[in-house]
Amino acid sequence: MGMSTHVVGIRSPDAKWKQMKAVWDACQVAGVDPPDEVLEFFNHSPPDPAGIEVRLEGNPCVRAYYDAMRQGFEVEIDKLPKNVTTVRFFNSY
Image 1: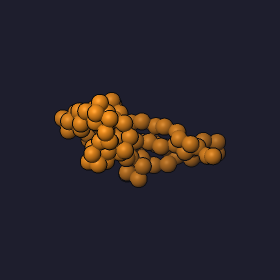
Image 2: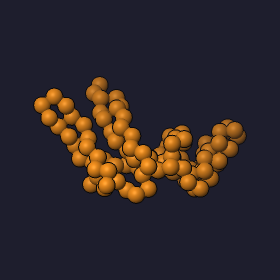
Image 3: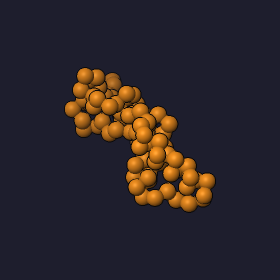
Image 4: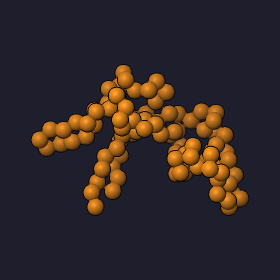
């Protein structure tokens, strides 16, 4: 199984995030699945306390980086979407 590296932006929690999180939490307490709208808002994953993931791969602010021994991403900070406050790099299998 291979490993892949990803880069996403994070938008800080806003009023809508807090409302959706409240619904998520109420559903957890009640033992029921959250509504589709809430699941889609959180990308079918538990809410991330850091905020909302913003896909950056394919965005003009990110380009692949390669040299003889390394590969990864370069992020042009001035091209990030203006609501992104954090950039997260992660590996997945």
